[in-house]
Image 1 (cartoon, protein in one colour):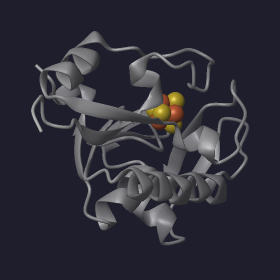
Image 2: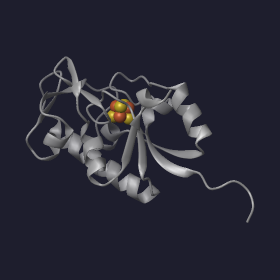
Image 3: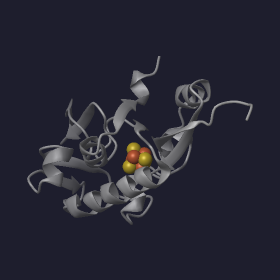
Length: 155
Ligand code: SF4
């Protein structure tokens, strides 16, 4: 066989790739992400954990009221929409579906959108305040050995 090596699959937050999956119906297309994927010969597997959870788009904004992604997985943290609805269970469902997808596609790495209650890699929102922490899907996939970077890690 000749030719280039097969690209490695990598799980990528769909909004970073230009899909309009965000709570406000917009995307967060990021040219640095697209360039990085090309340069590193990576095959993006786009996912939006919140859509995989069955939540609509647009949808109310969500944030942590206590704890972070790992706490929500363990039934300790509290994740709410701005109207006060507890969405912890839905986000756990989205995380579980994302894990299935990662395993089906053979992804060992992920490039996720920081700050998101699902996809946050280094930081999340606790109320209106940015704090160090991970989103619910990131926390679950970390427990299963995936390695993470966020769009902010790309130079
Ligand atoms: S859940 Fe993740 S992929 Fe979906 S819109 Fe939010 S940051 Fe993007």
